[in-house]
Length: 371
Image (tube, rainbow, N blue to C red; front, side, top):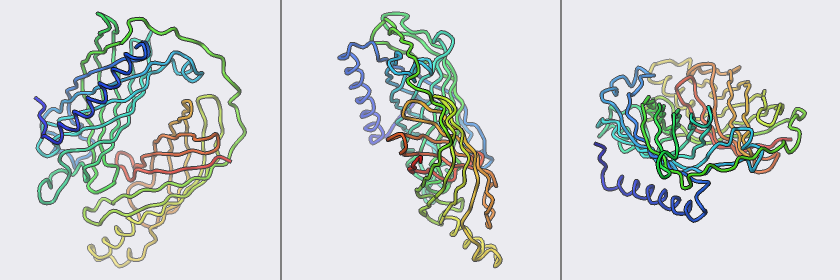
């Protein structure tokens, strides 16, 4: 049984009230474009890092409440991606552990469909709070989350049947739930849960929308373009107690638009990560290593990437390699996945998570221009 403290209950109440408001708005607009989902999940904490093996004790459980808007091909991108849904979700996770306790996450999500729309793939990204972050005094065993604020990625694959009875349907499947504070504050091992799921869905209208098929508005094969960008934020290294520091990333890359959905990238970037300066000083003093003292904390890398375009949004994925890193920290390779929004055709804002394998280094916010 999932139980919550008074403050947590207030947060959940506000989330449920928001979903209820969206429910009523859906009815006001005739309902044909909206539906609700409520799923219960039960699973296991995956030990992807030996540092969190002591946290794998009980089986986590939780619920995911979702409100979605259907698309019917009114825009070309909807046709290309098989008429996906998009919306907001509220996720509640109980780890059945005094160390990890619970989390409450607000998500934005997209649902993609396959096999005559019976198979749903849900991709959600969100931000929320954990009720029991790391604390030297009260919760020193929690090396998964160093801060109360955490980010989350939710991936779900469900087989569903809609409109079985008066708009109600059933769905079942599996999900992977990742929580991490993105190195906002140490420690930051994060957690991954693999879960089985069972739930209900409700459509405001039992009739499926009439799907349209639109021709492409223009050709999307373009010449190579130069991009200039910056990324910034705050983070902390692996050593607890050294403090949070700001960072700045400057770079440039060339991109080539291959089609309506795809483009590729090749570029370089320089990292000014002040947390590394703290790590260098700490290692020089604590490990009596004078040769480390004064080492340059800056890093330079080259990277290649792929960008999946969805209307004004896109999902860039990049893999990079440090060609200059005097201080060896983590692996020489890194990956980045994010979300990009094109304010104009040549101006965009970005949000991304940079990591070395499964260890996140930073949550990055930035902007760029495409020349």
